[in-house]
Image (cartoon, rainbow, N blue to C red):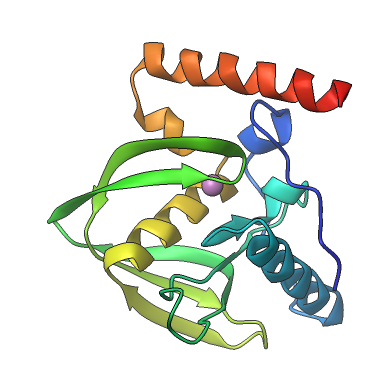
Length: 172
Ligand code: NI
């Protein structure tokens, strides 16, 4: 397994719509392993393909509590099939926007169909943190970031902060 480099906003690759995975093969399974490794190393609860520069419709999550056993999930070509009318507000963060946390309101529950890491079609309902994480990661596959839900002023403040961070990182 390889820990991949995580792209930091702003980056044009984080704004693009990703391509479907045509076949779940050994290469995709290796990619999924790398993504999980990279997510745990960061550490984070979710990571999507474009965040490591892979423009494919795949993301990984693990929303288990720290004390619980890990619950790694790989979702390939995910699609929302249902969302609840009830909404929920969570403070979200993103590995591509480090150390920024802002409240985002989304459907409280969501159902998604996807292929698992074995290429098997599945459909699952997510709630609580899982619902937030799966919707946040699916957004990544459509070139959308959680800061896109914030006001224009807040978003440009965060973007400027990230530009500064990237400059500092490049100098280091
Ligand atoms: Ni994110």
